[in-house]
Image (cartoon, rainbow, N blue to C red; front, side, top):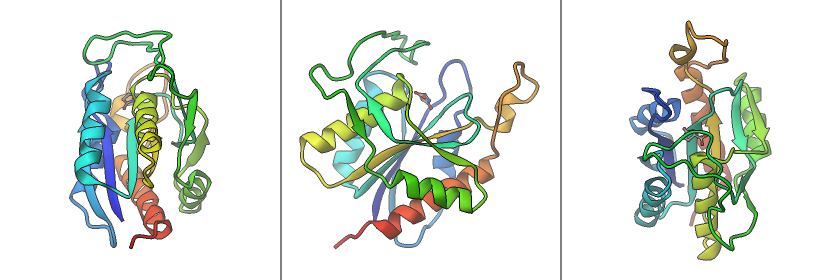
Length: 207
Ligand code: PCA
């Protein structure tokens, strides 16, 4: 399986993004049967999706798995749907604060992830890694890149599967801060995303 794995740079004044850390860890690892390309996406309205689509075109993957951080998540969240909406609560790293706008004018209202979301969540929970299906990837960059990837695949009638996983924050992002927020260790997130990739590799039949 040719996999494109993406994370995001830090945003909103934070110095770390768990998705970036997980991608760095996995970029150094071999997973049997997986030929992996990794990239860190800018948290910026134009450069984020642009970097993703450009890397997609050069890597030609069978599967795209994008990762991002969701500040208040208590578990790993496998996103089922991306909606055609930009409604930022904070500015992106380029200073854009966009509200009430479609991602793609005249694009469909939403796309479903084309990954086996239920199976992924079941595999993670069976391994003792807390996970759930999420029905909203938000209205910021994570939702935007998921939507734009699925739109590109749909528009060009490609067979690539694609989806998005939100990760909780790392313990060092929440320690000593109020209000109290949940967190998950980097090690557990890396184990979780590895299990997701292994599940995807087992379900993708490549020639
Ligand atoms: N999380 C943000 C954008 C980048 C990231 O890691 C989001 O949920 O949209």
